[in-house]
Image (tube, rainbow, N blue to C red):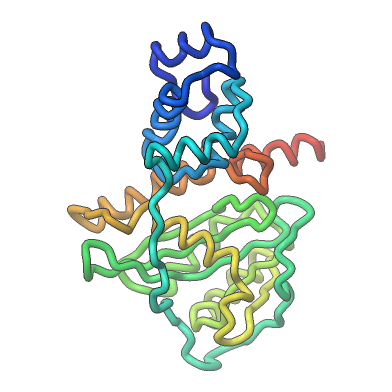
Length: 269
């Protein structure tokens, strides 16, 4: 059976009774549809679909998967995401930290380098919400996050305090006013975390968190409507659980962030 999705009985027995290299195109297309059917997996591209097939023991070439997905109109929808970024910069209102990361987004182990930022999301047209996340650069795991109606200091401080089991990590952000405020700095000191900041108006200095927010919006915001803020926040909770525990990443050798981190810690021990 597939690791992340359940096959229908007919597909399962078809795969058992047919040699892997003789599966018909239409049957392979049906299997791909099943892989993409679960919540949030409709975004799966041909490489993730190929990984799911490999987990099922079907060693189909990724080029054939791409061809079938094109033929049967199964490729993921593309979105134009060139929108105005949320800007929390208010000038120098506190301490500006050194740029420790310097676009070196590689990490040797879990909990070594963590990036964070805030994004403003408009859901249901014009209703605003603010999302922050703390993402581990080693595994891309979302370690903590918060969703609020206003960009208060609690938006960033509350999830920071959830990192109490992490010691001496670098916390990298932009120069937004939240990250300069004494309450944020005191939390860093209390947790023995080191602060790093991007240069002013330089999003590429924090590219990994921008990438995560793009994935979040594709899955939770675009073409979706919510009855209330609570429903919207619940959907983000569901997506981040899926992202951490089930969404495979090519750079993690096809593993989810949590599985990759767990494997690294098992090897280290």
